[in-house]
Amino acid sequence: MKSKIERKCCNCGELFQPDYRNRKRQLSCPQEACRKAMKAARQRRWLSKPENKNYFRGSEHVERVREWRGQHPGYWKRAIKKPSAPLQDALGSQVVDTRSPLQDALSSQHIVLIGLISQICGTTLQDDIAKAFSNLLRVGRDILSIEEISPDGSKGNITTRADTPRPQTV
Image (cartoon, rainbow, N blue to C red):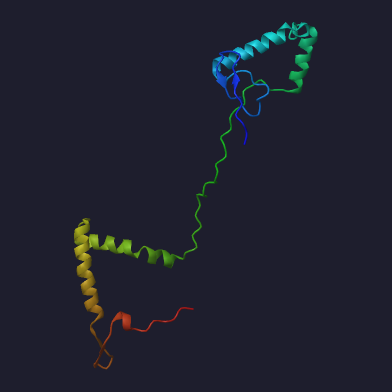
């Protein structure tokens, strides 16, 4: 188990725990005022050395900076933020429909039926359409349950649509 190291801030004098990655060199606490004071002290220390006194002045330094800028064109310009790529691509706007026109017609039959009933009733109220639908359903069941009449005129069995044999699909 690691022991917690505490250090006294050289600016405000408060105890703080230095960052574990920089614990040997961190001298100030993470407060903004202390960090700014440490940066100013480092700058003063750097400028107090004779070799750094005129580091950014003089013709040789101007030429050094020009060379560096020539090697790094556009470094000081702000980068234009590109919109970040989405985590997932958007679905294509074109939908491939593999259904046949017959399947389209069959899937929209209930919509057509509701529209037809509303036209017959002369209303778009759902309650009126539901009543008309119930009446039409009852009449349809009655029609499918009537006796079959054979071509010779004799009455046959009572059959419903459910009783009629269906062709097998292949």
